[in-house]
Amino acid sequence: MKQVLFLYNPQSGKGKIEKDSQAIGEMFRQAGYSIVDGPIDFSRNPFNGHETVDLVVVAGGDGTVNYVVNRMRERGLSLELGIIPAGTANDFAGIVGMAKDPL
Image 1 (cartoon, rainbow, N blue to C red):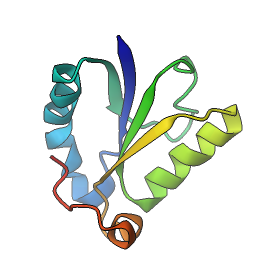
Image 2 (cartoon, rainbow, N blue to C red):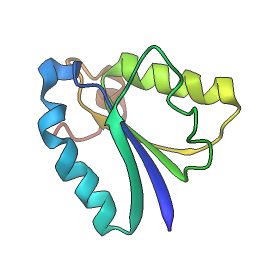
Image 3 (tube, one colour):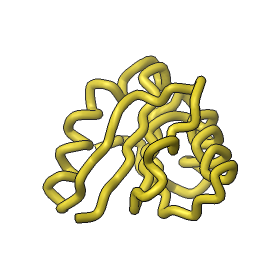
């Protein structure tokens, strides 16, 4: 079974993503993924203990996405990355034409 690491920033976008996090997690379960999820802890590398995941999904703003990508690079990980725009401005998501609704 494939495993997804789903990280979300509960502070992003005025905290709206936290209410959607369970529904997002359930979508991955229904797609056949084992899921490790939770709010991101910026004081540690979120990949500690999760080096073998198949997919990383980040829900947050530009700063959260930047943090996760840089922690991946620190660990030398090359993983598939999903981004759910959940910040205030979501500049990256806007530039690449992503939908604004996290679900």
